[in-house]
Image (cartoon, rainbow, N blue to C red; front, side, top):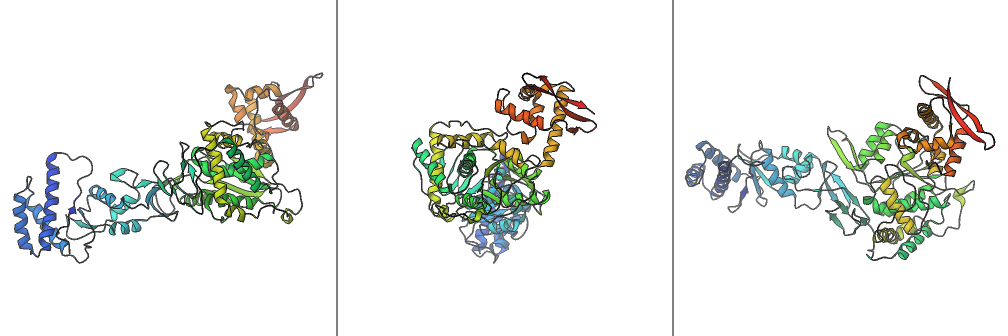
Length: 582
């Protein structure tokens, strides 16, 4: 039974009402329905209720029609006496045929729920740091727990099925939507785009991030000095110092991977990290585990990259719905060549059709991608979307090595708070200093990440970030892809010079000419980072590459060309090259 003092809310029409008269009529209908329910609850029969309702209607500024009053009498009488009405809940009255007015009231009932968010184009709940995706049935359950619904056009109650579907798939802010948007869930404090630290558990409206701390994470001061950043970097290097990094570049790159986990909001798109080694047992998976522990506080469940494109697309769409801070794929044993993976890496928002439904998801891509493997090879567009962290123990059985300073990953788990504090200290000191840029190389499409992470590392005393990029391009190039890239490049050179000759320096100058960018864009990845025409190291590398291909015939489609070499100046040993059509 309905309480006598219960106020039934009838929502008004969506959008602006056509005129003031229609608004008054709506208020009249609302008032009379409440009055009818209250009188019925006092024990009046339908005839008595009808007399009172018509009398009450006569007192209204804008009375309703006789037909409308009879509808309200029937609806109020039946609804007030129903056994399935929950008297502890408010009542939302309207018409199940008029969706928009109901939605405003339903959003009001849902908005106090602090666990509800909009994520990826759907409705989710966040509990214990885990995202759960709602379905039409679960939304219907949520609504039914918050109000009774009565149809003023027909007798009885109705389940708000259409409204549940509309709420589930609504665009943020539409039809009175007050549910908060969610970008991702994190388990560590992170830097907002304005450089401030978000370290208070719960939801942050500025960044649209939900922070669910795992483990004991200490807060850092806001006035750290450069020496503290240098000390923090040294402490992190000590933690991973037992790993046989191939070079200092690789070691710095790994600290860059850890930094990415806390400065992700400042970075835009982030390239995929390759943790690579000549053989098994060198420590690749262990380094990946440490990164996962830092990001989440837990050890990872390793996956493997799917072998075909449809499965790759499904896998990423499924995983990104969970808003993971890091995704690790172990033991890549084939050439990594995937248009889907390449697209994921360079996407701020990943769009794909939801499995089993005819609608598009829009999922924020904020995960750091990591792949481990032995002598990883890259094909297609993957080389310029990756950076490498290479280990080399220089022994036949690297897994038998001993004498380690720390027992990992246990040490990382036990000292996770200190690791995160060190990373945040490095980042915050760099921000206080005014974001000084590092001298590291830049990767196209990832310039922000290169500047942020490279700047933080260099200011903390770690130089050489991405310094192994050219070597990675040469080492990971797939032979088949490299041949295709060389043929494409020779086609660009032939289009530029025809059968005329050119020197290495002339080619280097043309590759830096804005009017001949096709020469630069078509260059094989195995050439490494392209330098200026005055860069002697680059000229030597370019000359060696051309010399190594002299006499080779390249298929340009309908034509074939042969790379020829001659001597222009025997005294200076200056070589010239030209492409002769066959």
